[in-house]
Image (cartoon, rainbow, N blue to C red; front, side):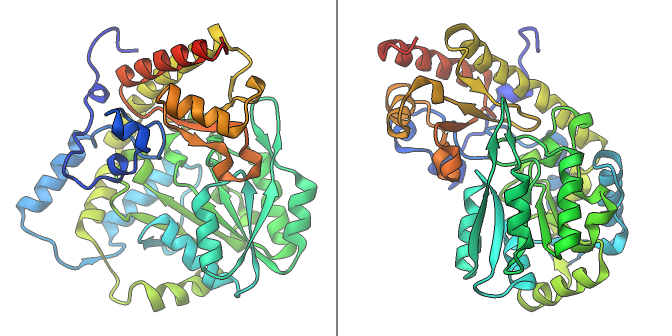
Amino acid sequence: MNNGKMSEFDILIDHEGLASGRDLFRPKQAMDNGLPSFSFAETDFMVPSFFRDAMHELIDRGFMGYTVAGDDGYMDAVREWFSNYHGFEPEREWIIPVYGVLRTMSMTIRAFSKEGEGVIILSPGYMAYEGLIENNKRKLIRSSLLIGEDEFLIDWKDLEEKMSDQKNRILFLCNAHNPTMHFWSMEDLTRIAALSDRYGTYVVVDETFYDLYMDIRKASSYGAIEKGRKWAVIINALSKAFNITGLNAANAIIPDEETREIFLKTFRAEQRGSGSIEPIVRTAVMSLYSENGRRWLDSLMEYVRENIRVLEAFFSEYRPDVRVFRYDVAYLVWVDWRSLGLSDEELEDLLFNDALMCVDMGYKYGPEGKGFTRIHLGTSRKNVKEAVERLKKAMREKHLI
């Protein structure tokens, strides 16, 4: 808590005139009323000041030329970050600088499967996966998660059945899981690795939200499991952690040489033959994968944790049966509204039109998300408190509290 003092996270980005997706993709109700959106996985916070300084230094030197991908400085920064915060240190040759997580996941589809074959996701799952899979002419295979007391659980019988089917060549594994925002346990990851090894299923791990952990002791990395490395592609990025989603900065970690070579054939054919990355990406990686970066993330999490407490306190006082599910990372929470007895249409009307609290509706992440919402709290405390007051008023008017 900041004891009344202004935090750097109380000062938000001025999005006007920037063609900002965070601004322009706001739901209509939020735009019409000049209100922030509580959807979309990008915060309203300014990037760190030390990162801005690094960008100014690069620009002041007047350089925007070809930049070698994976020089010593870059690789050392990535390897040290993984060693310190991911529980394992990748070998240098495992690391491939790539242009964005989703673009790289799309390439894994083409590298490791054929048209008509299946790609498995754990559902509810990130909605963009569906487009990647279907636009690459593969079949979307949902393994429905089970609803536990405050988290979603893997249906192991169903997952093994789908991974054992040789027509399903890939599992997309999001860790931390989007939209529920919890880490899979090391026990879960180890079981997935064993199934991958048994059936020869490639596991493509999306670690976009990994570095936003609330508690490093709860963080779990697939790369730390040796048995899983034969069939693994781990994709990690700074984008969500440091609010630089506009930079296509990511790294693919591929421990197995044969798997790496299969991926590189697709990578070289359609992405890059020159071995160059953007100079601003190199500067970003070396600036943010640092002690300064970790301290800034810790401060961000402290601020966001208090935002979440504001929402939790409202539910605790007025509707304790509406549950915020377990969250291990980030500024997004997964909320279970089913006890209200509302249809998804009625819930959406309550939140969007009455409370003007425009969130991500759970049904968009698959049928398993019905009755849930993903709520974005990566904004100022003031915005969160005002939204909770609007929600309180709307629920009172609907006789829900």
